[in-house]
Image (tube, rainbow, N blue to C red; front, side, top):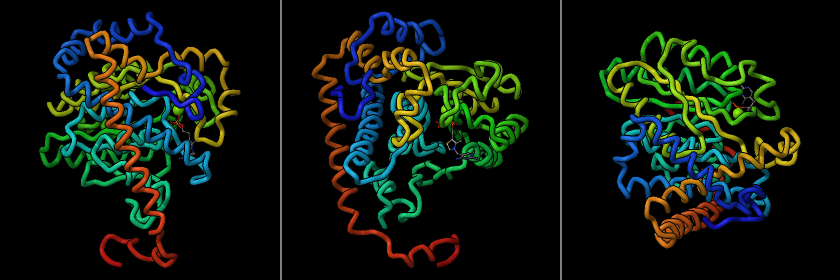
Length: 363
Ligand SMILES: Cc1ncc(C[n+]2csc(CCOP(=O)(O)OP(=O)(O)O)c2C)c(N)n1
Ligand SMILES: [Mg+2]
């Protein structure tokens, strides 16, 4: 994809494919027979959609970053480098049927579930026509299967468990999914929700998004076991891990988890290993570089989920111009969404609007 030296992490701006990592990308899918057979059945359109989803998510974030640099916004929370952990799982669900609760790092889920990109951007601008009418930058629309989260980390776990409970009680073969950051696994709410889903055998998928950091706290400072390998077993639920920078592995692992949920086999706890290529938000990117040794950025920078998937697709016979066509379409979508969102700034909510629409049953 086109790189953006002014906004991309430096490792991405000068990204070159490392053949060994491209091989690992393929081996990761091929060594697991179940995942491999699922991936083998993906159509060209499925691949196109996954690739477009990754691009949309990256370009959504690039737009936000440009807005921060040009003074449109003071701050934005980005998911750079973690796009595959969001996009793969969403595409593995039955959209319009299943429900997700995206955390701030999962903006791509909002878009890939079918909400408009312009609305996702409007949420940041707090315009009167944004999804929460200017109240919150967290985005959701249950009509699209997206639960608008609150900022309290871990709290979507019991809520998603509750939604999964209603699916089970109504005998609906639907799945509810949320992501839990490595840091958020330490919250009481995440523990309660995971355990409740476990003992009630609910059709819920919890993805531990281990990006190695929580705000400015490195994984080893808040998580003594080093990995989350035993996490699922400690709750007595089925679990699996996936490469959080490999969109096909993320897709296949989640598809298998969803099949289990729909078959009434209880929740799934997936562990995605990835890395936050930026700061917690745009304000602390320099501090983030000081939080970790530089080599970690170098190593993870080589594993750009978009670059690696492009190389995989090229090996599978896609031409550079086919990829460029998808990219041009997505870039056009983002440009139009950006213009629409910016135009909404003449529709800022009136102050008194804060007093209405608070309760569901009246004004
Ligand atoms: C209950 C609660 N405590 C603290 C915070 C402040 N906070 C926001 S994000 C964050 C770190 C989350 O880290 P992690 O779960 O690893 O997710 P990541 O930001 O890495 O995606 C914290 C502590 C919060 N939002 N909610
Ligand atoms: Mg984290």
